[in-house]
Image (cartoon, rainbow, N blue to C red; front, side, top):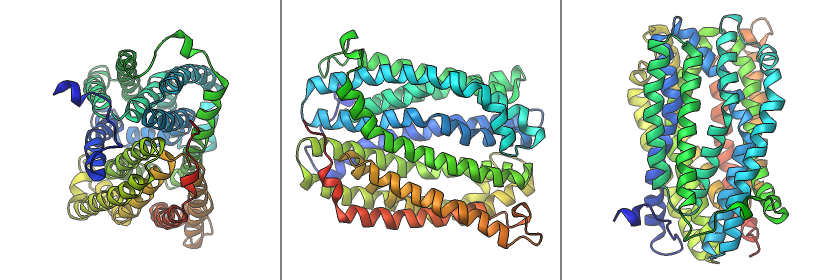
Length: 461
């Protein structure tokens, strides 16, 4: 039983919705556990730091920049997942072996380069984004520690993506749960006992994610019945590096576009002051959990589509797309109902400040229905990516995040400002613009899925 549970899963056989759901559930638990990293950070600094509300704001202001730093690795992970799924579906052992080895090497080179390039400019970036003076130092500490330890975050994302591409979502879950427990313990120790404040939660996260990435590497090294793992395959090979970049670059750019938009909007958020920044952070923490089913179904459908496209089973891809999307929509509808009914209690977990709870809840209500739209976007984008079409989701992200959200956010703030300055406008512009982006993204994704050009993008075996 245990052997089957942790073994790679062939998703080209069986009832589509059962395969998708069985793969999604462990990954959903894992994604929730991963979200606990940042959530526990927020709760611990909010309760134990010298100035809890400012500490929450400092961590929140740092996250969009960290997401931007991670775009390289998100791209590598996305490319690797698609290649692994398609090579696995096609039973191509050599292609699978070189994909895994080349991903490990490319990630190491990217980590060294990123640390060298980005570390000298962190403080200047924070100042450019109008980060309030009373949270700037804490924000810088969080960023610097996260950047120095970025290899742990990078390798977990990439190696767990490879493992999931093989159809094993259980192993990555177990390793992440172990790291999450370590993170919680270290958070409390560093902040509550050692009084390290924001720097403490950053250090705890780096150590924990390094542990999870090491466990993933050990797992892969023991899967020699599926592929070969050795020095020969670590040496960069043009064909595989090029394919990783070709498939992964659009996904990385998608995240870069999203993160860039978040950073630009963060500048507007910062102009509303520390109290609104803290409320926005609380909203994003709850949002992170609300989005987990959508992300999980999206990733599951990427693996499902990849394996079935590799096997030439487009009939199963279409059935899985319909069934998987319906499950994701149903799950998001339940989450929306929970937020509407119990949202204020969720906000109270992060802070005891009544005004902050009320503000956070009012902002959350704006976003609630948008999770249903995101279920459609993530599911159908997952199908397209798994089939090898990573460009279309990138262009949709560009349209919604840059050409829609940024003008909407600043436009609403400007036109509702009595002084003509966006900082004096409606604070809710941040959430209203995000909701509009989600709905537009769902409409565009559905249209391009129906057009069907993604069916011609499979990797040539």
